[in-house]
Length: 167
Image (cartoon, rainbow, N blue to C red; front, side, top):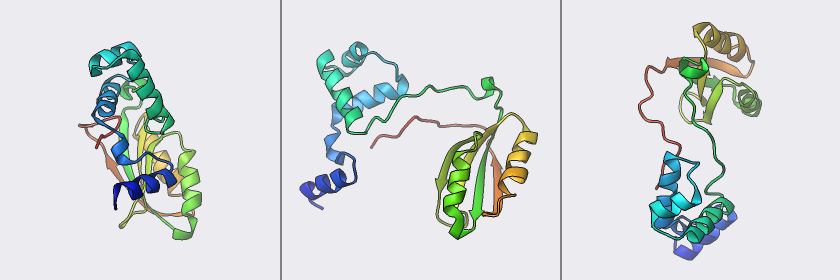
């Protein structure tokens, strides 16, 4: 695909073309990955551009949808959510939309993705204790007509947790 075609395809999909992110934008994103509350002045200094340049690039990244928002990173254990588990879900195919809606409403679900292979969805669940996890899996998930089976994997240690990955 030539550059012009790639730019038009990206524009139709509502996202910037991959080559619109240059090394300065990447540096801005690297700084924000460490501290999303970095001031524009500090951002400009760390990246080596003017404050006006940092501000305009930051606004462009937001307007282009590259930066979709800012969020706090929390220590889940300090919130009382000491158990983390990955749950693989095998669903009934005609009901995937209902399953999607149900999973988005579950406050214990931090992450959800529909997948290929033996299982149809993967969710990351954070709960206070094993009893709560049991309730989430046995009483709330497996009781759904749209769920055929689940497999639960306890997370022993989170080794890598990035806010995002850069190309």
